[in-house]
Length: 224
Figure 1 (cartoon, rainbow, N blue to C red):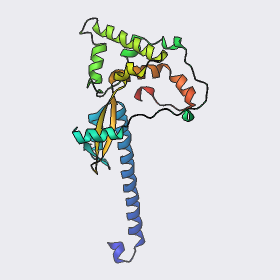
Figure 2: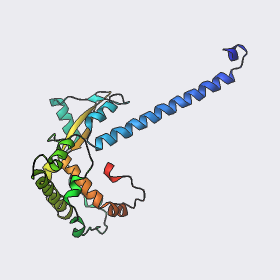
Figure 3: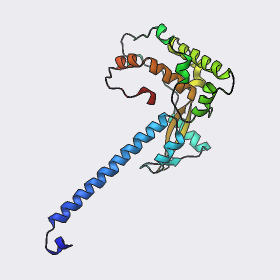
Figure 4: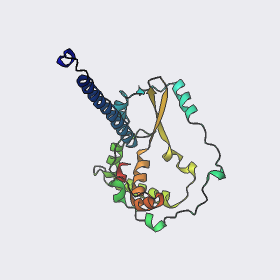
């Protein structure tokens, strides 16, 4: 007010501009932080935690209840796949991983995967899976289950399996997020068993993947 009384307008204007710039920067940083947190939680399958973030995001307003009209809109957003066009395939020698490498997948690799989150269509979350393959309360059953998952991981990594045979494993649960305009943003959540196998194989072939995509800077694969 003293500046204003004495006609010194540059000082208060400059001060306000500095404050506004910091406020804009803070809002932008918070938005970017929310987006990163949302994507991280969705990749981990932690849908409920992710929804607590998007509830106050700029264009998301919670989750739609599953109703007939919502199911119809979800189907419209996921049409049947078109036939493959040969022109879209890059004519390049296939990068082959020797079968013996994937034979190194062990039961310990399966049981040591650090992950969390909700489940896919079966609704079996990661905490339940961890109990089923790691708990000592069920005698030899967890070890047997872990052995079967290990064998499945090896086969998926080394053999060409028809999609129809593993369609259930690859199925995802669609979560219809609600946009502020009442639109739908579909997000899928895969089965925990698929995530366990995927992380195990990715961890084993980490160096091969880095070489194949020519990526020098790779973050922690266990968080992917």
